[in-house]
Image 1 (cartoon, helix red, strand yellow):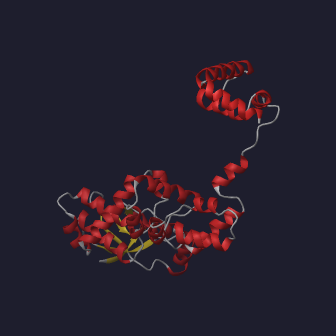
Image 2: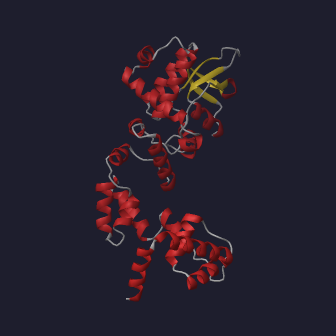
Image 3: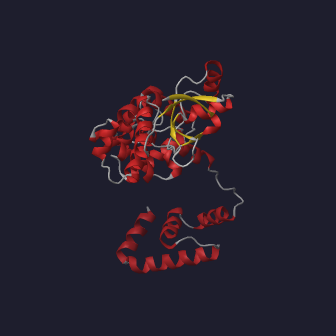
Length: 323
């Protein structure tokens, strides 16, 4: 039954929507002010509040309609049980293609939890979807729920993209999310498919051919690292500008000042002993804080080396030294 209902008699039912609609709030408010609300809200009589109605579809139209000054809302009143209301709201949103794959999956998972007598197959029949469609979207929801809240926005946005994402190992999934954070957008399904076939990382390419021209680097990023042409061009641009994260780290490193005590210590040691000997002792015995400790270690090492080297080796070194 269709009826105009005052806004103060309407309340919102449970909602699981995650994303924002394509049309901005401002645009929809302007449209409502000029043309009114043209799509009925789906409502039912409130189960515990006589005279009130529960909105199951049209939450945003109701919220923005109140901001636009609407007093009476066009409603399609259906007497529905909870499950029937859930299914009707799901189907309306699904038909309008307003929900992401994650939202669809979360709605399905919620229904399966709230109504344990339902299976994916039986619920799929009610929603008008096949068993494989249901399984794919449940897997999408489970992937979303298994991801930390701070990383969820960096996951692929489509069902196919998330399916490709699940093919990667947990370590590679973390790497993909970190890359998504750096560039500010999640990967597409096609990009993930290309990356799965990649044989080199972008950093490996840049470090192997640092002086090649942009055209060559773009080609290699596409062929060996799985980049699209646009992404490859942008990455090469960042590389040439020394703006990639690993380049910034190298560029920001500063050589210690000559007045630094450690630098002075090593400079003094190098006046007395070969750098190769200093490096060998530091690598195997560790660094020392004072010049006296260094000298003691080097003398002890040289003494034991001389004792264990044998007469033949000592004579051989002396012969080379004489030359």
